[in-house]
Image 1 (cartoon, rainbow, N blue to C red):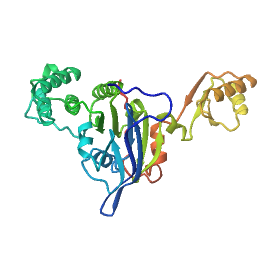
Image 2 (image 1 turned 90 degrees about the vertical axis):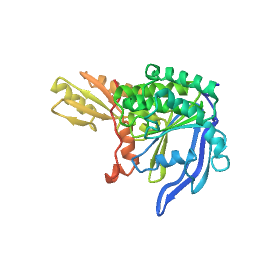
Image 3 (image 1 turned 45 degrees about the vertical axis):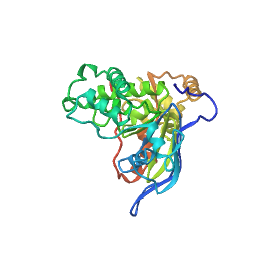
Image 4 (image 1 turned 120 degrees about the vertical axis):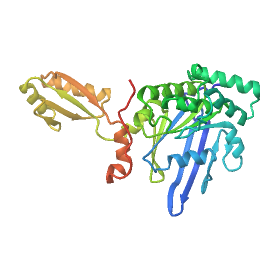
Length: 331
């Protein structure tokens, strides 16, 4: 049954963690992270390679044990009830878990057998998922012949054979072309609309911006920021309004009205700092009108998740690590 999104008050957590820790030798990968992910939502965990994103997924999906802290997934404690967690989740890792010697349908039936669904139910789920992921026409083709996008769709279909409450997607669109990425995004949206909770790790900032209800930035083993995409962007300075003029005289009068604005004398443009909100824009237009100036055009610029990442992680200061990919929205 779909889990409706609630408009007010705390929502029940599909995934929660408190003080989660993990080290490998002297290297601390997770240094006490806390999570609260409401049911029926998309949560995105961002961070450079080596930040601990995959380690977090592995701990929450019971693939490895934490060194400290506690966590629950779908109401099951990951340490006390790992089988309960496994029964309630699906995991799609960075690399496809397909048997290339089997056909698409055979891969799904194999997963159904592993989940002990029974012959009739297994066949029903396989055919349903082949249709749902638009691969029914290649059901009898070996997985080895599939393109990268088709492989990821089949991989995700296998994750859904058991009808999980929570799905962990660990960088699911890495290496996909823009069309395949968009198809995957649409699939994630349909899953969440049906009440599934999605825990997404990604290196694509536009992916988190498109899909996630909440985003956390992981750096140095700690969550350094969390919120909606708009909340995170609002934390970063740099919002401004760009005013462009066609007449040098109007440009100079506008510069006099906004003495703190950054000038672009070649393009006859001013960059006026502000939050880009309606009140700020209204005040700006009033000042222009009072100066008797009309701008040729006006555009509002706000920080994006790229700016958030650079400001909140070590990459923004030291230049180390692996920067996240940006501006690759499928068309």
